[in-house]
Amino acid sequence: MTSRPLQSVKLDIDWSAQTILPISFKGKEVVLEARAYQGCDEATQAMALINRAGVTPGATDAMPLVRVHSGCVTGDIFHSLRCDCYAQLQAALERITTAPNGVLIYLPYHEGRGIGLFKKIRAYALQDQGLDTVDANLEIGSPIDARDYTFAAEVLRDLGFPKIRLMTNNPLKVAELKAHGIDVVEQVPLVTTPGSHNKRYLETKRKRMAHKL
Image (cartoon, rainbow, N blue to C red):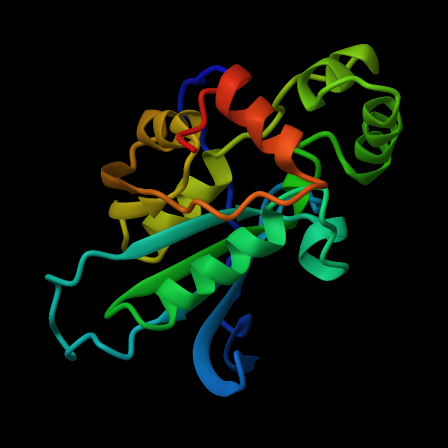
């Protein structure tokens, strides 16, 4: 993945797509602000979950702690052990719900590092035969990482967060958001414990994709 020049993305923002969302997290009820966004392409959608519980009304000095999370059906929904997506999502929510100003940007169209669910499962089948995640993507004719962060940057600006602390291990995500005008003042690690099913997956991210693990 390489940084691309900033492109204008038309946001179809309907403020009726804003609500209060109570969630159950680790046995507790947590109330978050939820906003939904639609891009020019109907498949380009995002949801922002915001915790402002510790922000004094009118205060602007609480630096947002942000997780830009790529949707993962197998991990986030079914708790697949082949990746660390669910573990990262849970760790991010833990910090967001306890931070003075925490934000989760959820990008469902980023499934499979942007190649989609069908191609991701095809790549999984090749991983079953011995390929790592990088070579499996290349074998099916897909990019190693096809994600684009233009829309995520537009959402952050719309929320009034042009300057953030970003929870990620991926230096390319930092570079992409910076290229699209977001000032990432700090990269906050989000390291999870490897398991027998995702140890090689994490090693590949560290060795071949420069993730800070």
